[in-house]
Length: 398
Figure 1: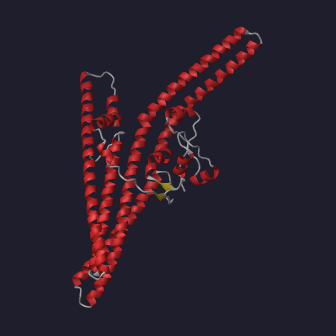
Figure 2: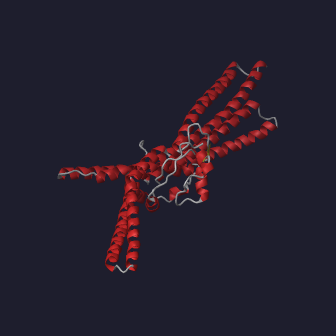
Figure 3: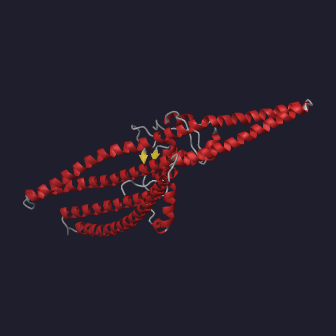
């Protein structure tokens, strides 16, 4: 079960509510949480949504939320932010309680006819309450700033990376399905070649070719299974499960290619620049006793970084177009391969096509289907990269 999952209880609950920060503290393993109903449901999550997040299935769409609530690296950063603000929020609550106490005492003094001290206590109560509200607003502002400048970039980077890993794993599933089927078919082809060789209808070259194809498929399948096991463990640990857990992995969504046509490239460049932490850091860099040369150097650095990001956004956009064209071509090729295979199925049933020729056609269809699924994954990854770039996360290999 999810032994590394976390939830948060924050003494100053105002932070989570007003600042949108989910600052929680580690609790018990998920198996215990289920039995004790110990998880505190964050604001903004209805019962159904929270239950889905706590189930034993890793869904692609849930990854950003799983990172926010259960990723160990992110939780460590969030705990540090909580630690910095917790004492201040507790002070706010203490001031508010003291203000309330002064006002209650003022009422008692007023009832006793002591107007002077009653007025003083009322004034003290109002001052404390007002100061508490002012301080709370300042802390909320600081919390939002910390979330935007510190926590959000970590969430976005981790979410983008884990979604990419998820897509990569699903691509491996496609390849595994193809290799499993090809291993089955190559086994049949080898058996047929052996039979035909015994009656002089197949050459030693045909037999060797079938054996090589089968061995290659088996070796690829073995290597792929090992890689998938390693990647799967990485995925579940990044999203809060223990490496020994065995959660189900959901399916990836269909890529929304129509979204490409709605892209406003110039507006997206502006947005990407506004969220890019490298550019934000460059703009916020300050030096004491700055010279004119320092100022000009900083301006050039910012300008160069913005121009590079604009170029990167163009690259990501053209990659979307390329991947869309590749997917459309792969879908056309699959349709043609399916028609050929269906026609050969009828010919084989009528005795007009040999077993080996029929199996070869089926392999071609399976390969075309895998190529279409691969193109689909590549399309989704391209959409993923572009959308995360709008939040400041740009691939490093552009």
